[in-house]
Length: 467
Ligand SMILES: Cc1ncc(COP(=O)(O)O)c(C=O)c1O
Image 1 (cartoon, helix red, strand yellow):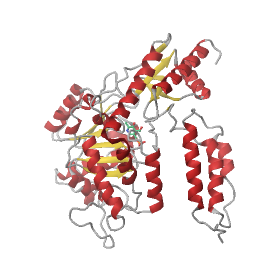
Image 2 (cartoon, helix red, strand yellow):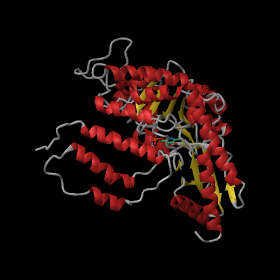
Image 3 (tube, helix red, strand yellow):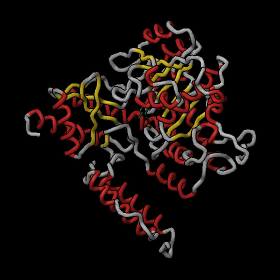
Image 4 (cartoon, helix red, strand yellow):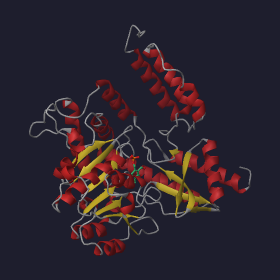
């Protein structure tokens, strides 16, 4: 039997107090977890509780137990992966989302959640300057956005060849060639596996030194096909930040009658900045685009957008119908028509709130600031003896090599231990590099300089053999 407190809502106030204190504190310094996985697992572990407990006390204990193992990925000097800031306004909207407990499947179940998605979808198309007729599914992230977009691509490409994949599946279906850049993100292959298109069946197209698809190589590959392909391109390579040359690629795909999909988890956002969008020029000619809210729109996790030019193909691949689910009236939009799930979180509230929070100009300024910080870190460190900036900083990523593989990994470990900034490790062209990803609205040039000083100190120590 539950020992509920007099005020069943006290837990909410306690969580808010902890959340606010945490967010005020982490702006001060990078903090790596002080407790390792096994230790924290032991703290949480125990027998299945027999009796219910006091919610307020549970939340207090949760905060105390978890905090030493919370990686400070919203801190301004967190450069480990492309993780946005989970901006406080987005978090607050997300708290309300949870409190309202809406099941954002359809208009009947969740009228406000459905309406806010429709508005946020329109705003996203305008900010990213994509075809206004495109439809958007509000999903968990770019992984699922890639999956949803490629499901629409599969549906449409097979429909054009007289095959109904939704009804008849893939057994006996016409062959459907898939082409992707050789530096495509791992989640593209996840999507292809799930869709039955086979990760190993993909024809990889050669890329240049920055990881961009080479148009001539794509042209040659397309010329060898006898049916129209799905071509998967990329905006924002995870190591270099580079974007495929869409002006050259898109006409080749269109001439072949193919479907061009863009994985733009963070790179698609270059479209929202007047000074960065030359990089994505021509991207609006694609057929589908996957991107994240939780990276460069600064929404809390999880948030991604599956954007499909042909809304009918999008719905055909995704829509669920059942007698107990009343369809939306004409002119209304059921969110579940564009995503995999039926029951789902109302992600539109946080998206709407974050677009309001920054506005068009604030979004552009934040994107440009992240890129300026990445360029400053990359160039400043690249001037130090023994440090090699491995690719020009064209967006928000800087990859650096310190001496050899072992020294590079040692510097990364030393920087993580120094806990002024958090940087990650990655491999680029077969060699280990330090990866500095800048994607938080909280990061300033002062943070960049603190990080540079820490990294330079650590390199000096590694070089002298004292770290
Ligand atoms: C280019 C690219 N595609 C896809 C993904 C997967 O995105 P998510 O982790 O949000 O699902 C990422 C994540 O870093 C990415 O950088």
